[in-house]
Image (cartoon, each protein chain N blue to C red):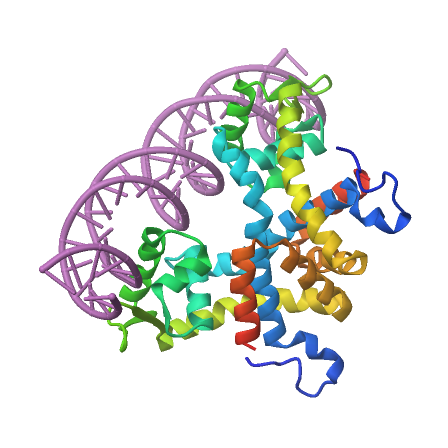
Length: 168
Length: 168
DNA sequence: CTTGGAATGTCAACAAGGCTGACATATCCT
DNA sequence: AGGATATGTCAGCCTTGTTGACATTCCAAG
């Protein structure tokens, strides 16, 4: 178990020790709490939760996306998503338009109210991220993204890259 | 809202644009799924969930920790933790010893069975982390940790640093 | 034109894991 | 003796995930 990276290898692999990996694991745990803390605080006052935030985020990023596509990005069941989506539509934050070519599909868009909520949430989240980026510097940020990308499941990486490159 | 980092500033701050921040936010979202995926799969077969994993992890890291300390690390209520802890103790994975100095305190330890479960879970999680580290390289890993640390809430950072330095 | 399959919506039931509030017990400290 | 602390526990609630079943609508292939 212990530190297989060392074995017959060189000092250059010291960053692969179980010790280093454990620090990374704990860093992910504690950092993710910070990552969601600010939007969570805002959402608590309204009637919503983190699931609503995620839906709003990706509808903002992919205007006109279909339910199926959103399902696959979020990685939840349609029943779960539908519950969230229904309240967002009822409350006038999201609009669901019947597809023109394929009328079975629904294309999702934020209403002005939805866009305003999106801004409030992502501003809060970006503020923290910006402070972290600034304090760590550009080189660290590049490494941060590189490790995160390598950590994703294949399916998730596909979605991520499509958003990263398509949305740029 | 858009790209305040650019304003009257230099090119050196291009990594602080909203665009770059958004990519980091999405990377965190997708990567965290991968981060928990392997332990979750293992836990699904047994009677446990992610909350049990977290408790086991930190009891392993801080043998003899008190319930109160664990509460503060995990950031949940004692009722939530207790539900998890009770099942772990009933199932013989965790042992709760009355404190010697202060008999009000309970000191938590993994039993051999608990330690074995811990190993199985953290092996799975470390494997993925190791692959990510290896593919990204030591410089990226340093940046990864740096940005995550900067992203934590103050309370979480205290716990993280205590574990990072104390546990080294 | 019919039929199979895809995309969507919805109902019901359930589980995990958060939360609050209230209360009990044992222990420590002053 | 009495207040504070550490823990455990009961009851109930919420969010968000799950499965399974079923209806509708529509596209596309035969």
